[in-house]
Image (cartoon, rainbow, N blue to C red; front, side):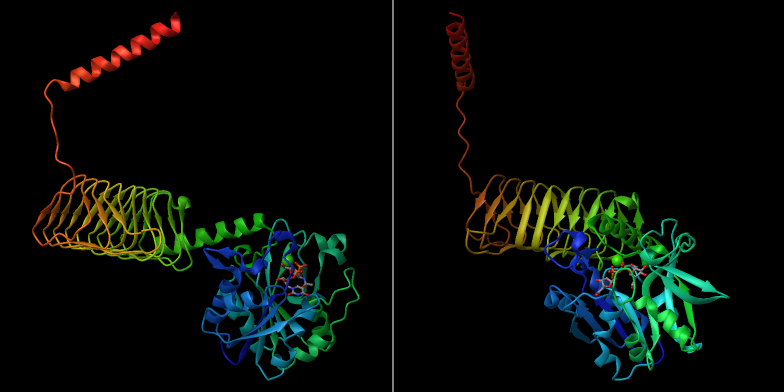
Length: 455
Ligand code: UD1
Ligand code: CA
């Protein structure tokens, strides 16, 4: 974006309709606070600085707005006197001199850089104000954009609109670009003589016009302009966002068999020719390299999955799980803070936590790393080409050498050297004929009980 751009982000609302103990803008879309989405779009559009207008939870909101690289200055709006009043909180910053002031809402997180940059560009065409509008078949509640001869002449709030105006389906998103040099003086001219007694930012259109200036509209889709007032709308926005992110990944070469059942996070990275089966959830911090298959019903967060690996069905990868190339983690396995070496297999019913598993090692069904003693966590190291027998309990700290073997059902409490076999279980005792004897005894007990209950 050309020139110096200040983005004023309104996030001082009381969020009453969210019925929440925290500010609305801290609620997440794609596992990231709404306010962080807005700031990311502003950054991408070329804004230089954020003036953040906060009310409740100011510190937490400021922290969430500061996760990107844009500098953020925070302004507290103590009284909620309207959107025009809110933007004016940043007057001192606006007056340090900007070419454009971009207004965005902390509770409209789906906006992308395109319309923001387009609104900014309108100022270069000589407009003093450019408002981002959208069309919807159900405009009730939104301010309507009133146009005449291709120019924006007023924005009418629902409560102040007449019947004709209410029929207009072109709505105010609330997002707009204002001529930076004139912004502070225009904003100061906003009054509060309206039905709600609020300082309406939307009055800027008529103020600009009264001063001989011109206002323009930029049309965005409802999917970008939509705002969030309650949790039902939060879910609607989440659905829009998920659809967008899935599409982005599919277009970049990811196969999803039932995309509507795959849930992604804002930072999910997935490589080419990855197949994702139905019902997979990606929490934050997941990277998947190329040629991986994620089978159905897997839950993955904070994990790195290298190329050729296979996950699930029904696998759970928790933070710091790292699968090296061609590793396999199969059904009902949980991996946490553990590296699974190249081509290693953890195929069935295992818990591998705080561990390093060497290349090509085979972890038998039901293997558990006993990593926690109720107070501290300990590490398990398993060498390359090791074979861990089914149902082994590896009591950490413990290490199993390269090419070593543990017998099925072992409880391994001591280190196993390279190439060794460890048996951590009682030797089997077999008694000829004793099986039939036990069964006959049990049958007799059952018959006696039955007879007693009848008699
Ligand atoms: C506003 C617009 C309306 C538009 C709609 C889009 C005005 C007068 N109306 O209406 O034309 O269609 O948004 O969603 O601008 N806020 C503050 N401080 C305040 C008041 C509001 O920070 O004193 C913030 C809110 O937290 C919210 C945003 O500004 O993020 C919009 O405020 P809200 O009260 O929801 O405005 P609407 O009545 O929805
Ligand atoms: Ca609103």
